Length: 278
Image (tube, rainbow, N blue to C red; front, side, top):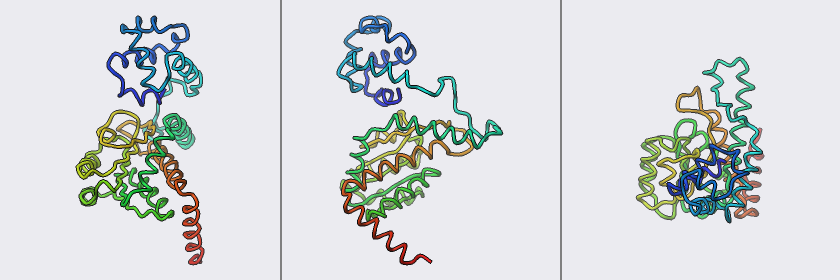
């Protein structure tokens, strides 16, 4: 379901109506034909078929099978909403926090697209300069990615200060890559830096939650994550966990673009640490 919603923005108005109808009436699909769905959604059979193809299926039959199976596999009750473990004053807050993190990782796995992550990794490994921008808790994820890439000898800079981000974004070009990590994809300072990067024709990779956002629109590659928190929250918990997960997947692909070289550089860093270990 999450994967289908990811491509919703590519659909026409008539095709979106069909998808919305099916999401709201999941149980009826197994008994419906293209014609019946078109009639129920007040559109044409051609719109139903076009929607299926835009979502990556050969036709309605393939879509129907996958749609039914996907809904049959859902383990999290649909009426189970996210409850902030602090604001809800839950005495079992520790256990609830772990359950929420497991849930968001399961959702992020459904959004994971191997080809997109590989494309992002290739852009990073071929870049002249790599910058990683984030604010608040997302900056912690930026530093994690910076540390990982530097261990395979890809020098990069994680930047969390807004003015420094604008300065760094001013001196890049089409040979460079900027990675933006933002849960909402709407943070003012991040968007400002992304606009400067776009003007300078730098390649933009973003890690952001599923849904329409200005950051996603400005990006060449978008790696979607799931997030259960709303705007008012006690802390960034599930959003941060899903970002760390995506960063690990991205780093793994970066290392694998030249795996022999990556292993050698990791051995070098290990030997260096061991040499000065007390």
